[in-house]
Length: 267
Image (cartoon, rainbow, N blue to C red; front, side):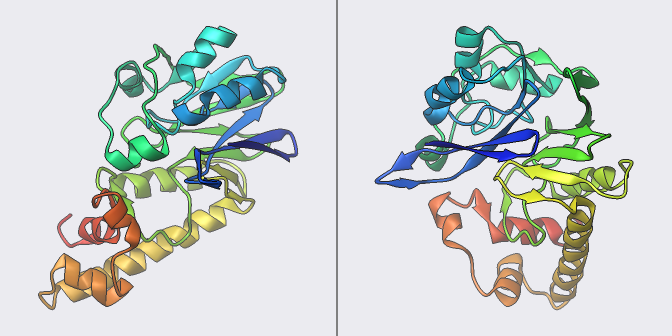
């Protein structure tokens, strides 16, 4: 399923696989002045191509290599003849079939491999200038795009919530924190954050600061409980009451325990 929302000069494209009348998980791409940021998952690739056929698209950027962000790359290249850009570390990952867990295959599917080009330091459209900000943490190849005049920041999966309660097993919370601190240093009093799950934060720096404060307090509480010789699962249950159902559905790939373990002293 695909639905588009107009956000001023930006078109938000929400995509997700529909099963039994319900979308399993919404992922957002963004189209602004001919620049498409991310391409959704394999299951919505044909819908995205039909939508883009009614709009002018000149350039495409992937924020990172995950399957819900590169799923229409190959089809866009064939049907629209467009170059696609990504962080250099993403190039060999997008250009081959990476193994997926069962839940990833069900929700997003296998992207067709596609040869993409390395991102330059900035992307220019007719009206806007987007600086490429390296933001590792969610993945090593993650980038954000920043338009300094408008204060727009397209954050991919780097930032999605002010009170994150789960983490992927392969995410690096220290890297996430460092990358978010980098966004706080961008010029301007505020940022508007456009996230990969569709949430938009008009007071982005405030939201990031809130999140970093939340993580700092959570780290302190984890350290306090670890000082009482509690294990990571015991600390999880003490702070969050229990694990989420998503942990079972993803085989532990997404879990509260992952977050707690990364916040343990010495990590």
